[in-house]
Image (cartoon, rainbow, N blue to C red; front, side, top):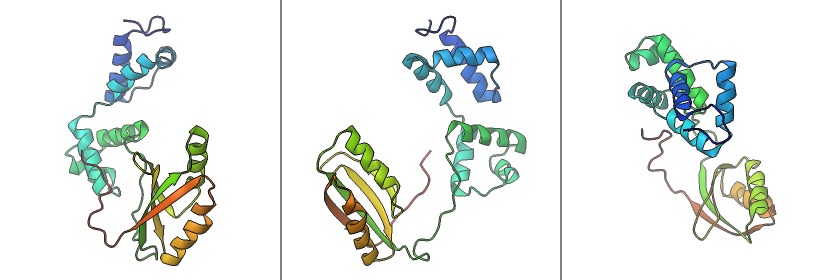
Length: 205
């Protein structure tokens, strides 16, 4: 089976390369890079390659679970937690980072102690929506520090924002002077968090 437009690059070849990358953190040779690059130009080639790359074994999952609980662990501490020696654990961790399974390491701050205790879920409906309007809205939202999360949603509203503020006055200023300045915003509905019952920063794997 050949990838369309990729002479000499077979399905088996792509799978073999991806398996080698997974197992050995393979550094591709120039010819392999050339053939792989050609394959990834086709939709089918991309699907096959990335599907063959997503398989994680139980050790990979253990590393991810452990780091979700404590990302400050040293390589030795992480290796002890998953019952391996430090070298293969270090290689696996770097591979997980490179592939994007681990996006970044952050410190989780206490919003209350830092004077950002007011948490609001803000639903936003635009007057109308098309590609350019959505792009413009997204660009504006990314530049507003009070918005910590933003989701494009289905239903009556187009976007769901998670907003942190010092108090009601600051949130009002956010609505009037920042969100209200975006001309495509049609309506807003705010839901104020009274108490936080559960907040998990990790994902279940």
